[in-house]
Length: 535
Image 1 (cartoon, rainbow, N blue to C red):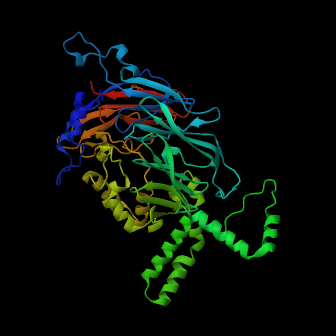
Image 2 (image 1 turned 90 degrees about the vertical axis):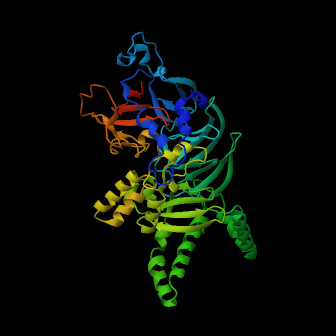
Image 3 (image 1 turned 60 degrees about the horizontal axis):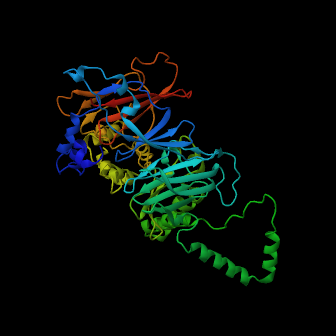
């Protein structure tokens, strides 16, 4: 099925993986999907009681986890086949045997990932397509009132053990693991981790470090650098040697004092460094230089420094790293904000700043407020540069954005024209930056040049939605604007108990006319899984 020379869908797909020719809104071969749609549905299909996560970007695997969050179960999407004795098979109901999950998916393996006191983070999964490696995470429970020792940030929770597992998805072999102890990494929706080709960025919120790792072809995870307290590899050595030289100059009395101070005491927290972290030093230096370069007059320069820098100095010092994404192999987009915003469920209401950091020169090269009009204009014109698809993932070229799709741009401009406050509108738009890694489906049915649908109910974004009993309509974008297919989550007859809150998630295959809708309640009842496909 996935050997491309035998798959007509994949062969046609190969013809249209590049961007559309100049002056066109959609590649002509892309319109193939206007008539190949998942218009048939099997409601409440018989399937294992698993937590289904997503299809991989190349469509080769369906990732799921056991309900007890201990095991990873990987499936291979297949295709429904059955025999029919009548002449008009399309009008006949499917055989009962065909209405099963196993008719569409073949289980490849089940792998236990979590130890006795760890659980799999069901919202976390990243895919390295070039090697067909999968990155998964397990962790122990959060400790919300953990003491801030050893340089940890006060107010950030702690997790006793976080383990990242690198698997070869072809056979489920665990190739490497990386463990973080007494740390806090935001695993929800993969927010604290970003993958770009063979590079991996992991953000430690508790210790304010950005760990840069490389995924080798052999399947090993190799540390490249840690950005935060230090920026260059020899920063720590330089500071330690400078401290030692200073101690030697102060003579024996200082050494005696040190010996007294450093007598081990029970439950005594580690002494904090008197220096600001390397990344914070870079940030403050960039802000000061920017103000100095703006004003040529010495008097105005001093006044501006007082107003824009010294007055807000402590606010800048208190900023912590929230989130990170790669812009390319050398540059990071870093989001800074308050401690409260980093651990809040509603970080949107907290002020934030963006910085562009060059990993090679260790310099901040740009700094923006959340309401920056300059950053908004860059985002409006070059939105695709913030998504950064892997070079080996041509499927990701199909994700609609306002910088590559006229209909998405019209929606953005309409929202902008309706906004009562432009700065507030900018904040609302930029709050999503940096994007969660691999957070959007490349399915052609979310291509806004092909179909129109209600984005409040369904979209390419990987997140749960409030469930509805009404079918979600996909209408042809071109005239005659006909209804092409509908996606209805939940039971075919609807739900009788309207008081129960239900949420739905949608898993679309990136190539085939195949999708899963999963409707569940908050009371751990078995989910209602529907399969949407083309007969």
